[in-house]
Amino acid sequence: VMLRSSFCRFPLLFSARRYVATTTTEEISNTTPKLLPKQIVKELDRFVVGQHEAKKAVALALHNRWRRESLSEELRKEIHPKNILMIGPTGVGKTEIARRLAKICNAPFIKVEATKYTETGYHGSDVDTIIKDLVNVGIAQRKKILREQSLEQVNKAVEDKLLALLLGEYPPRWEDRLRSMLRDGTLDDIEVKVPFIEPVGGDDEAVNTFRLVVSADQGSSFQSLHKDNVKWEMRCIDEARDWFERQEIEQLSEQKDEELIKEAIKDVQERGIVFLDEIDKICCPKGAVRTRGDASDEGVQRDLLPLIEGTMIETKYGEVDTSKILFITSGAFYSAKPKDILPELQGRLPIRVSLNPLTEEDMFRILTEPEYNLVKQQVELMKTEKMEITFPEQSIREIARLATEINRSVENIGARRLHTILEKIMEDISFHCEEGKNVEIAIPHIQECVKPMLEKADTAKYII
Image (tube, rainbow, N blue to C red; front, side, top):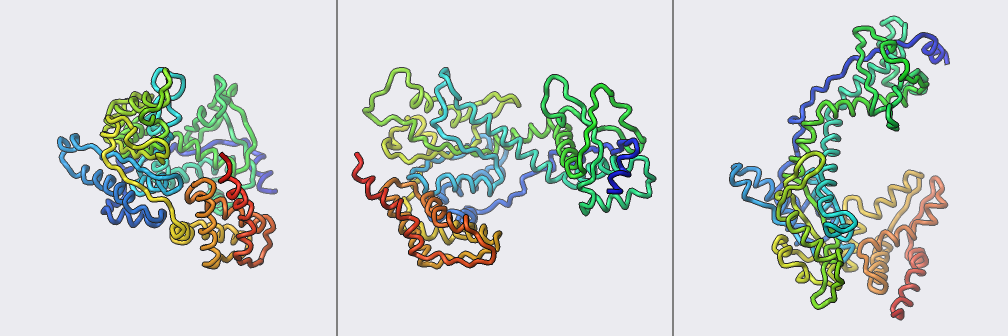
């Protein structure tokens, strides 16, 4: 309490050293090791069960990118990525393989559904927005890397600003003591006056319009700011720290804005990955009647042609060349068939892989083999309540059997069925959690929880 009253008694002189970023955009490079195809497959095996052919295809596509980087510039321009068509029912790992692949190479990645786009000229989003969204992902990724590499410098600048607010008219000999207290969190609840410049023109976030640039070495104070705009508010140190951090990162991004955007666009062009799901939903089976003016199938496919083949897309950050972006398309192809895709589009998806439906054994492996499997997730969640949950092997096999049976009887949603069953099994246990309690998930409990789902399965087969 004494500290708080002392700090607020004196007029506050703002002192903060001007922070100038020393991290250049060129220093932010992709440090991901260039893995061999079999090493990429091994990495994917940590998270996705089975589907070796699909993993092999994406591993080769990724490694060929790294091979391309080693070629001369002239030859590199002539080599385009081999885009992929994945064919398989829902819930077998198509999306997860693509997502994990993007994480392995730290590439800009976006997953979109083909059904959300309309033919150019119709109401709705056209396919060009795919690339615009991918550029936004690339910029966010670059900002994150810049933030991580500059964290130490940002923390130092924020610390100096907080010290300035705390010191006021206190002598400099207090600085070391206060700095130590700041670092160990002792002062987090202390309140200080923080100046905000009220935004002009209705901007809701003052953090985007206010920059603290006066220098501690000059002993400048807030009196130099226009009093009409300045709004003083009491904030605890913890809140002020968060605000200053956002401000420093935003300022750093603005200083490097042009370079950062340029590098982000380069990332998108050279390493970007687009996962286009449900492409079968925009295919019209041969012989089907097409409605005049329908903008949901062939028109969208034709709009995708130049995007996948390679064209220049205009974004607010500049033009983006799509010729080196890897497109991974996928679909279940229940009603339509891969041959129903426009021939021109089929030619731009040269690699075609089929993913197998999941068997009961696959379900068991999904529950036990991945590094962060579903059973482990439930066990670790309950450990936060100091509860020990045990899943015997026979119980896990029963979950796999029931998931397979329900998928076969009702609707096949693949591995997603395991999420539904596990949540139902854990529902009451999680609700009535008691510290120090040990619970073994037995087969009768599993069958009791899943019984309503099986009853629905029995009646579903009679519904026309």
